[in-house]
Image 1 (tube, rainbow over the protein chains, first blue to last red):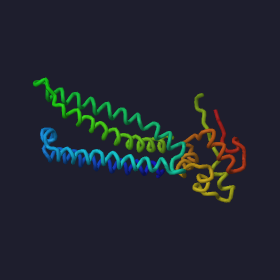
Image 2: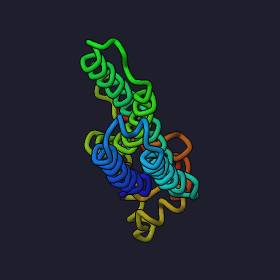
Image 3: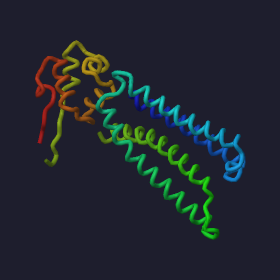
Image 4: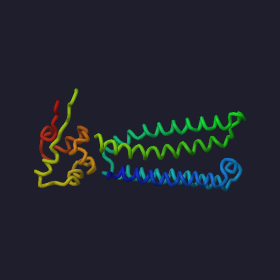
Length: 145
Length: 70
């Protein structure tokens, strides 16, 4: 397994753990209403969010900086990963638009805190999708060339 | 351009050069072992730069390593 491929798997695993922890903590600690009023809750969520992103950044960047770890084939696969990222981000935003529109249609008023939650979720999805894009890239390269 | 392919003799050349390992060749030309594996399996076509490096690692010309077939 190429070093970048191995890091992408690690990034995906760690990212998923952080994402699941993020969702669980968010739901178990009271959801959107508590998030708006409880500062301790917001700090916990921010730590999980930023921690996951930084962990992922370190994992991928450490690989890219070491000489000889990434070659032209790896870079080609890395350059194609944003296609998956872009799709994942678009679908996440579409899901948010549809869900919020359906839930708050009657009130015509979407709580401002959702801006923060949407932004966090898009960044998490984008980071996970980058790792997934790399993993799929290697799978396709090994299977179809 | 239909059915054109680029084949290579990297596996044969490695064998002829003292059974050079994929790892050794990868280190000499500055790529990963996985790229050498993909090249030998015909699943990756290298850049001109890498192709020249591979040819030089074996001390042969580019066309001794890579063949373009239509």
